Image (cartoon, rainbow, N blue to C red; front, side, top):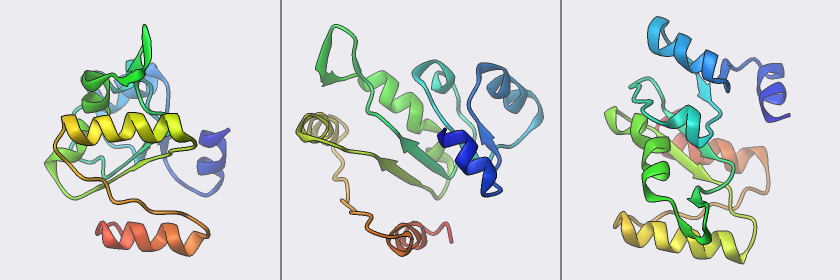
Length: 129
């Protein structure tokens, strides 16, 4: 549903393993909807926005972040300017995010999106608009 909504708004979106393989061979995607499998080894400098719909957690312990999977998802941002949005919905998500911040020694700026303008402001602050 997320992919369909983004495509409807005119964004190039990648979600499948086949799409990922085409990008690695042929070129660019504007948006990568990432699963742990699609993100693994994906290091493309054109990625400038990553949205984690859910935080990667360990299969055998859902309260612990999967550090390697999290890093794989955001590795493409390291080549240039970009933004990362983590969708946090409850106290469990917040607890996992705190652990990620500690492990990666990085504070995350919290943005509450009440409107499209809030989202656009966050993109502007990241240099993407």
